[in-house]
Image (cartoon, rainbow over all chains, first blue to last red; front, side, top):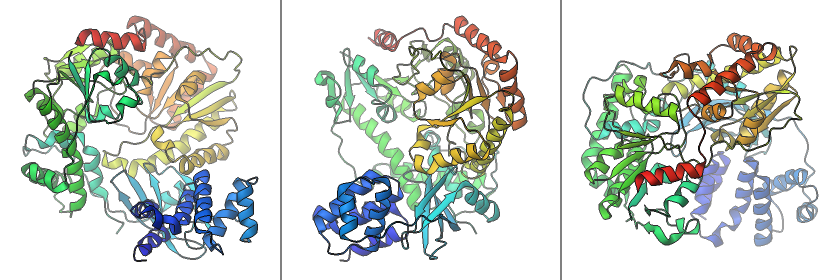
Length: 214
Length: 411
C-alpha cells in the first residue's frame, strides 16, 4: 500500500496531473482502487463522459459493498448531467447516494501563486476551500481569463476561481517582479548557443518569474 | 529520386497543416522521417523510417557537455545582465530539462542527416539553429511556415534581437504565400544582408487556409462583429502576468465599447478563440459569456469553427498581428487590430498598415467601429481590400496548384 499515499495526497492537494501520472505508473490490476480518483479528476475537468466511464468501471471491477463519500458525490452529480442513465440510477439506488443539493459555489481564497513552465505553462493558485478550509491548488493553462468551478477535493463543495479573484490577488500581493534591463548584452555569446536560446526563448523568459510571492 | 525531410517542428504539423502537401510530395520524393505511423496515413512506398536510438539524459549531457556548460553560463549572463545584476537562484532541474529539450531535437536532426543523404530540409522560422548543421551536411534548407504573416517575425524582430547578440541566418530558400509576403521577405533579406536566399512564390501549401467556396448566407440580416481572440506569447516576460492582467481589462473595455454601440445599430457578436485557449474551454468560456451578460450583449456566441466564423463576419477585431489577417484579407473582411501592446510591430509597408488599422484604446475603437455602423467605412475598407487583392494577385492558387509549383521547382 506504499504507493497509495502519493496518489491520494496528489488528489487531495488538487494536483491532478501528478495524480493521473502516479496512477499510470501502477500495473493495470493495481489501478482498480484508484479508478474513483480518476473519475473525480475527470469530473473536475468537466469531462463527464470519461468520469462516468471510470465510475462504472470502478463499480464493475471492485464491486464495493459501500460507496465512499467521493463515489456518492460523483454519482449524484453525474445524475444531473445524465438523468436517464440506467446504470447510474441503479448505482444511486443501490448505494443510497444522497440527492445533490444545489449550492452557490464559494469563492476560492487564494493564498499563494506559482508559475510552472514545463511541460506547458501553467498558473498554479494555492488556496483554501471556503467551506472546510482545506488547502488545495487550482490551475489554469496559458491564460488568466477564466471563470470556472471545481469541487474541493476533501469536502466536495464547489469553489470558484475567476479573473476577478486572480486580478485582486495579483494586484494586491507582492509578486516578485524584477526590473528588466532592456539594454543589449554586449558580451559575445558562444556561437552555438544564441540561436538555440533564441528559438527556445519560450523557456527562457519565464525563468524570470518562477518564484512565489514574497 | 530526391529525399526530403521535415524538421522536428514541421513534422509536428504534418497531420494538421501539411497533410495534402505530404501526400503530393510522396509521389515525387522519398520522405525520411522519424514518425513511425506515417504509413497508416500515407502511401508507404516512398517513406523511409529512421530508427532513433533512445538516448538517456546522461548520454545527451555527455555528448553535449561543453554546450551544456555554455548554455547554463549564457543564461546566467543573460539573466544577471537583464535583471540589473540582481543575482537570482535559477532552478537547475528546469534549466537542464530546457537544455535537453533543445539538444534532443538538434541531435535527432544531426543523426538523421548523418545516416542518409537528404536533399531538402523543410524548417520552421524558429528553427534557424538547424541551418548551419544542414549546410555542413550539404542539405538545402527551406523555410516552410505553418501560417503566413505580413509582419516582421518574432525571431527577426529588432526589439528581441537587441536582447542577445544574434546573427540572423536565412535558409537557401523561402516558400512565400503571395506577392505581398514575397515583398516582405525580400525586404527582410536585404535588411539583414541575407542575399543568398531564394524566395519562391509558390504559395504556402497549408490545409487550414480559409476555404472560400462556402455560399454566402444571404438570409442573414444582422451585422456581425467577430472577435478573434489570441493568447499571449509567453516568451515576453511582461506577458506572463502584467499583460495577462491588462488583457482582462482590455476585454472588459471591448465588451463595454460594443455594448455602448448597440443602441446605434443592433449587431451580433461572435468570439473565436485561439485553439490553445479552447483546450480548456470549461475554464475559459464562462469568462466571455459572463462579460456578454454583464454588458447586455444578448446576441453573443462563441464559435469553434474558424471558416464558419470568418464567413459570418462583417467586421473582424483581432487582438494582435495574427496570421489570421491573411485569411481575413483573402475573404475581404474588414479587420481592425485592437492591440494590447502600444509598441507592437508594424509592417514595413504602408499599404499593409493601411488595410489593417490599429487602435490601442477603447475610445479609438468605439469611434472606429461607429464609422462601420453608420457611415460608408465598411464599403471603403472592402474596396481597399479588393484593390490590394487585385494589385498583388492574392489568393489565386488552389492548394493542389501550390503543391505542384513547389514540387516542380524542387525536382
